[in-house]
Length: 329
Image (cartoon, rainbow, N blue to C red; front, side):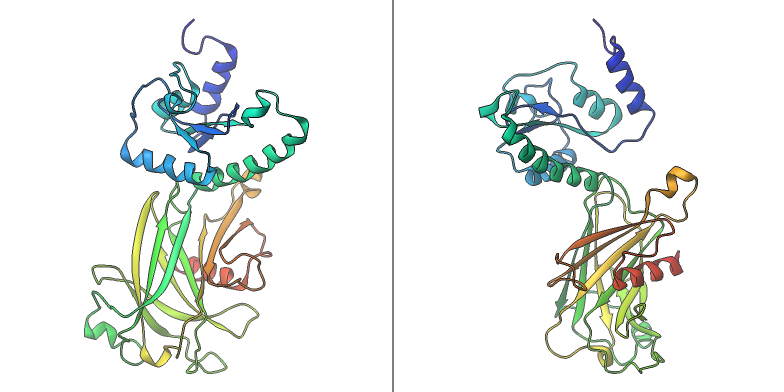
């Protein structure tokens, strides 16, 4: 008869207040729709920024009905858990109404496996969204935009090319990236000037932001167990829901001829583990992008997660990104 009067709701409040959840999913049935706060309201009450977050989630869920309860189930609800989680705790909370209309609250047994499989994929996306959801695009541009001073460009081997690589990085997640530094490694250059023993491994490129300020120097990095060279550099950590557009100015003597076939990875590392529970969590994450599969992987764009102390399972390009990030941290 009053908020949190029941032991079940008290237990949920204890769980939520004792943690720092970024997102929450409360499963309901049925109808194949996604509801989100504020369910007590007859009109939209969310901020534009949070509306955008829910819209991104709705685009992935791909259900035709999406929004507060009045827009989905057709009525308002008070005392609803999503509203309290969002309004009192700032959690991006939602309630998927799972199951087909034809099955009602008790779908046919032969449909249950499909319902589980489809919603498992949706839940993986919410888990990803709660962390750092890094997306990136790398293109060859003919516009330099703001450039470094001539004195700074003189540090590069050869003169600065009028063609630059433009790297657009977005963190669409609900958390900042782990650690103080990100590592970036780019493969696909035809590096004819680097000697076989790696003597020419010094600064070969400058990374600048949109105002022309230098963010980092980039160097060739020999990937572990691989003769290929990757262009590697550190970047500052990214805040939640942030975006950065960078230009990589490569010395002309290292610019590959012809079309580029670039693959690149962005890695984050939360640092050393502390305690038994923390040691079981992924410490490092690496997300890779490209026009074709990376090192035999089936997906062009893929993610890898590595627990603390586990050196296996990462592609060589991920390892290069982690190493340059760790060196700059």
